[in-house]
Length: 150
Image 1 (tube, rainbow, N blue to C red):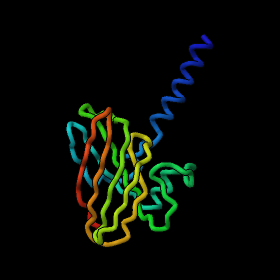
Image 2 (image 1 turned 90 degrees about the horizontal axis):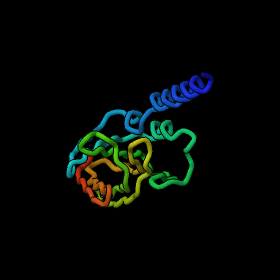
Image 3 (image 1 turned 60 degrees about the vertical axis):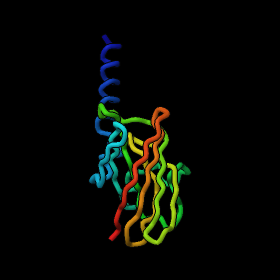
Image 4 (image 1 turned 30 degrees about the vertical axis):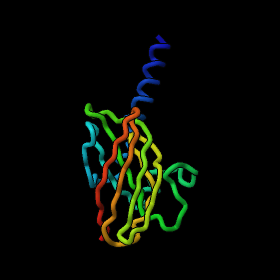
């Protein structure tokens, strides 16, 4: 009987922790773009640096893909990718960004809580061209779009 109670308590504790732990996507505010590519759904969010810092918590300052210590960083761009059944997928994801003046940024992302994010610089006003490249189960997904900074 003690073992059953112990197992039930452990299950409730870990189950509750998973239920209350915010996902990468839910901690990012509104989705600014949703797009389907080859049966996958890509949702994009843009965090300002205060939201990024809050989301990163104790991981702030660690050396990870997609994280930058550059003073030019203004935002954290995040994409979550789900398959046709709505299940989050894992893979390798990167962003290629061209500013209004033609300055290029290229970065791999850090995977966390079902999303992939990277620090980016949107210092200039104008239209940025963003390309997301994801390799999921050996399949390459590419999404191109524009994002305007006012």
